Length: 142
Image: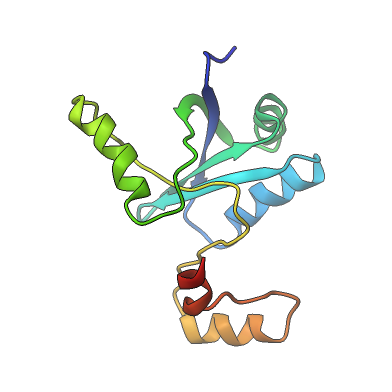
């Protein structure tokens, strides 16, 4: 059971190899679970995929049954003001209270950043597919 205003985050431990994040997202999609936000961090050998989903208990069970190691934890989700300094204003409140922020990532929006090993190759692969590439100008326009 979650505490008031706590959001459940799933941390999925995955091998740092091609296709592992895709396998997680496919398993969740096939189970009818919507990913609302995610973050991936990695080392040379493994990664941690942090997820916020619409049905965390069902997602946990789905991923566990698919052979993944999954951990649940409580996190805070904040609706930031969409203005310069919006993030800084919230982080300042927490840091001035002496609470360490371990990591931050965003949710809900449909824009996703992919940091790939071969940028030009990946852009060429996506160019003629049903994928809309977002420009820097669009990011700036909000």
